[in-house]
Image (spheres, rainbow, N blue to C red):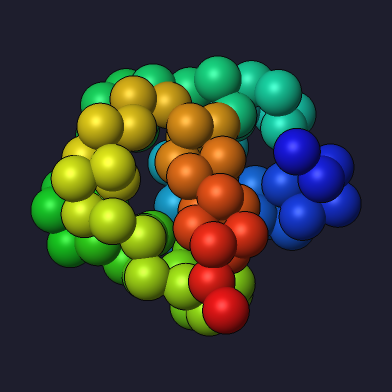
Length: 86
């Protein structure tokens, strides 16, 4: 995984989550965070996904997004989606 792109997406995650990202002091902690532990409501989760998709100009597969359990898995999915985009 391209570390620069991953770092950029984790920065977007931090901006999207605001205070909910504060307990995760470094990128490794944030990437390892369970999405369920972030206590996002459905609109916050949707906004996070839209922010990531917008940053990469992709549209991720909804069932694959739902299968993501950690922030790192979500970021990896978005990067894979970008790789498949033409």
